[in-house]
View 1 (cartoon, helix red, strand yellow):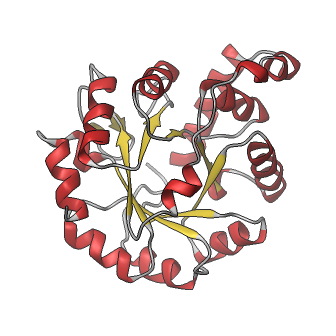
View 2 (cartoon, rainbow, N blue to C red; view 1 turned 90 degrees about the vertical axis):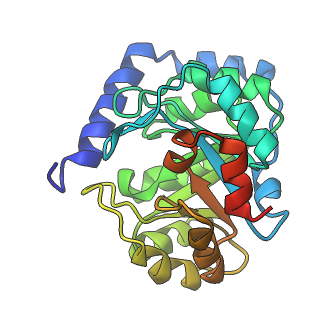
Length: 259
């Protein structure tokens, strides 16, 4: 897949899917009073030296099918038992085979905060995320212009959600800091080429202020990976592929966290 295609193609699909299900924003606003009570994801991620975000993930553009997750609720419960701090649920359907139903069913079944993992590129999705019970929302710097980042970050925050701002370069991390991000995810997978370069962690994590919650994303598969990013300043890791492929996610989480 060419450098200009991967992220662009995903976003084009997301926009089509949003158009097919979108309702007037005013209708979403009218329903906010009945939205689920939020869980404080920022507080959870700030409460210990190393937190783990465990992901419900069936597929990816880079690896194809990862796991046949017929029961996301059971998987999420095993994450909670294992000691995960937040559960991330993919809701993008075309490349990741996720669904909104996965998100709502998982959140109703566990007591942990839930991250909606998707490509948020419209105001509609932010209101939608709040109504679905997303405690933590992903915004990807590479997929938005700065005005969108500012507006969407502000809206999500006003709606009570914590926001994970994902960056892949030093320049993107500067943008995230400039818009007031409190949680920054450093993803070592290039979303344009889909290649993993763990040196990205070394470039970005140490330069982020100590006041920021720093999440290392992609390429985390062993305790040694967790130790490495911790030394670089990470407060949390996001792990998907390693957990969905594990025959015992509870044990794998405990290994990753050295519990």
